[in-house]
Image (cartoon, rainbow, N blue to C red; front, side):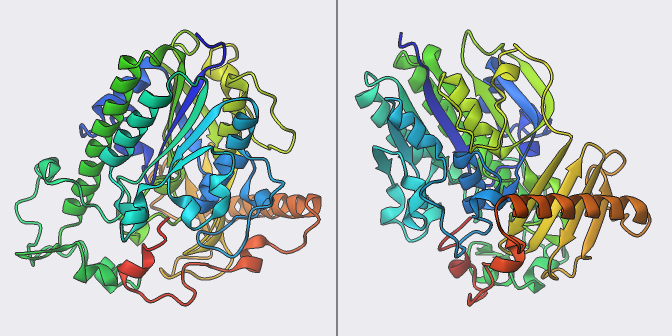
Length: 449
């Protein structure tokens, strides 16, 4: 056995934690992923510090907050510095064979850094999101069969199921929907989406059926869950291959996401913006037999930038000082019990320009400009009594809102000063996904996040 573990990093686009069984979901969306959690450790509160895809994955790779690496928007104008730390490069320099099954390099070149092999099967498809779980798993298994003796390896997989649009294979379409007629004209649960500039284009696309347009939001949520079940089968196929190839015992399997997905919360339908729990809370499951106690759960709060230093420590590689995240490795292996964060600061600058400050008790959201939903510029939620973040108490608790706003602004100012900058990056960059784009869904997802 090689003395350094292989790393298999499974990342899923748009997967919210609370739609997995191991995070308490009531539907059987994820039986194999749930088993993976029982075989390793599950982090209960991993929070994205930047959304959506491009900022989040850049944070994962660099181990830095987005305010530091500068990629604050999806499809934005900023470019990652060549001198920024990058996870796959460190593994390559340490002698790992590196392989990515991804397509982000098509639009942002830095996602190809450090990879000897970069497999992009979306080249032959009109939309980057049309790469199936079967495709990703199948190509990964082919690569593993051929290169399994080139240990150690670092492999990064980017699954697109269950990213919008939700189009699971037909064999999954019988699952989960409990309604009688998804096109019932008396059901108006999707009316706000049809009226909204972001959702209006979908009327002419995948939500049309021979019986009419979908009217029931629960039907769409069931489609999302069906896609997760389809993803779960793809993950099962991949993990079975690890067993068959004799790789499971010395492969660190990491399962996570770039961000979640709002179903209908806060009037945001089937999209990943809004600094709320549905989008910020993502899964993290880590398995390495003999090192990570099976069935363990970590209740602490972690951030996306913690993943890179964690994987480096797992491979006994040095963690560069430029990385801002904290390694979770000793917590995952049970060597330590204390860790995590008392507060997490997140940002988005794609459909909205907002900052958030989350503590164990409260979530405070500060907008830099009005959004498309007419949301208040300041939001405060008591996560203890209102975990769904349904009741904005910013006006009811002005002293708490003011204190958290001051703390947030102080953190931003301190970070900017340390970086030699003066302007808030959200103000400097501006919202990226509204600039010069038509409202049709086809254009929105050509470079999907």
